[in-house]
Length: 341
Ligand code: FA5
Image (tube, rainbow, N blue to C red):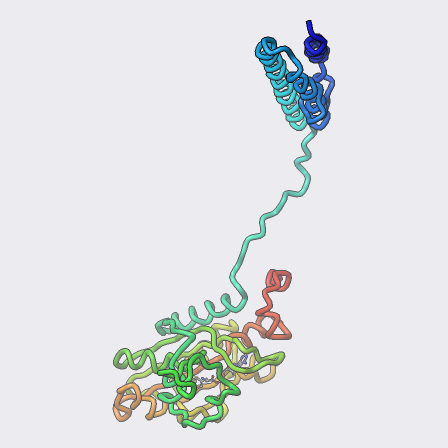
């Protein structure tokens, strides 16, 4: 018998003996078990080393010895898998047997919720709905005509200046039409009145955009617009609706003051101020009787119909309601802040 053959046989016997002696049973962790396995079949393992002797075996012995080695390899694998399964079972049994403290605080799920602006917006819309107004929605990108021209803004009005408006496309740049991010929700007056005949009572809320930026002005903010058109509508109707609206919003007595002001699309026009008992006057938005020129631009007969319109800032109302000092806090999306409402 060749020397290599003897060493090969003895090597296999040694490995089998080690297995018999419980080479894997001694391992008490998966890490130890894997180390023990590597001592047989790892790169430097005893079986791996033994296989290198194959080349030196006599030709007719290679096949049976290769088979014998493969059987040993299979036994190693079987013993390894067996011990791995029992280690896992032991770990599970330990976990289940460990005392379980039902008084430990649970891992809470944090539910999402609507943004404070969205909540105030819904509240405002619901109040107007209860007063008989229909709720509609409109686009934030609109035509220059709907935002300015058809509302009676003269072509050189400062609000149409690049200073105040974000333009999307511009005739001056060679585009077909001038489109912009709406600077107010009054676009909805033109859109809705052009679509259908009077009478109508409509309210619409959403985001508007201006080149404004300080503690009480954000480049993106929210407005709610309302308008009512019928025969013989008066300023008294306007004030009555605003009065009712504010009483419901603040849940009690509110004084409403209309302070003369100018907007191209109303005549007369006014700022809306409100005051709760003992409080100070707060400016809420603008309002007025819809200008005859607006009626002409939407195809209504100004001698037949009259109407009122109002537009209010939602963010300012939310700031007052929630005591938020800076409008930017509302839009920074910091959940530590938003989660506190
Ligand atoms: C208008 O936008 C008119 N469209 C309102 C109107 C409608 C008048 C219908 C007459 C008839 P004004 O620019 O004042 O008006 O804005 C209305 C309200 O939006 C303001 O009172 C204020 O509360 C809010 N607002 C205006 N600019 C900002 C801003 N940058 N950030 C937050 N709120 C703003």
